[in-house]
Image (cartoon, rainbow, N blue to C red; front, side, top):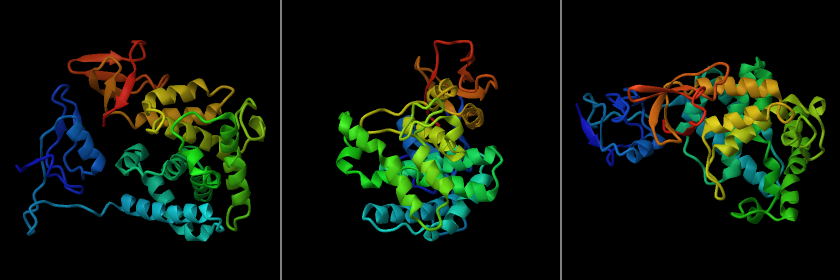
Length: 347
């Protein structure tokens, strides 16, 4: 056994023993986990002082450091290339999609292989530029929905690009407006709404971008009943890529901490998506998303609105956002106990 103070733990170190919640006995992290910044931050916040780290007895180093996560390596290249494209667009340069084509294909392959894209997203250190980080997240979530819908690899690349560039038009709007901490004025909000048109025009002029991807950017704020923008078109006239991006856009935006609002529990957000899946969002896409995304949380440690901390042990197919949670020696079925809900996913 080699106990190490949480303050001495470094990214890339490997857990030698499961970490359990002292209150519930639920496993927070399993042995063999390669620690990242998010893991360490959560453990520190939970008051865990020491953890058992794998010793590297065949090396001069005391502890094994793992830095060869293929997914994270590809993600970093994906993010770097995307940042370059966004910066070029911000300064009026033409988009060159060929610069990102190969790494998008690699990311699609990794997402198709992944059994839990949400766990992967939690591994990633958030960027200070919300629009940039949000675009990366939506791209990966949209690709995952495409996978669940049975899209071909060619189509998955297209939906990945649609998610990646859905907000590209925002680079044409002043940062003073885009990152304003308070409420936007009516004229400012009307300008922000035009990001869909700015993005469409930008993508429409870009060699290598299909009309389908451009429509994903133009229509991702359109709604089934015609209440969206910029054109107020209804369901049959909204491209499916835009419908997928719309769901991912809402989920990521509402589960992300912002300057002017707190992030919400993914379960509350999923309920919001379900409640808007008739007349606002595409019901089939919303159902595919919430049903599949909820399954990823089995085994996760969560905090309920009553303050109790427990482990999700079962997802109800008829209502995936209201799972069965084990809290110490009791079970709370959120499908029955309507006054309780998941306030936060701890791990």
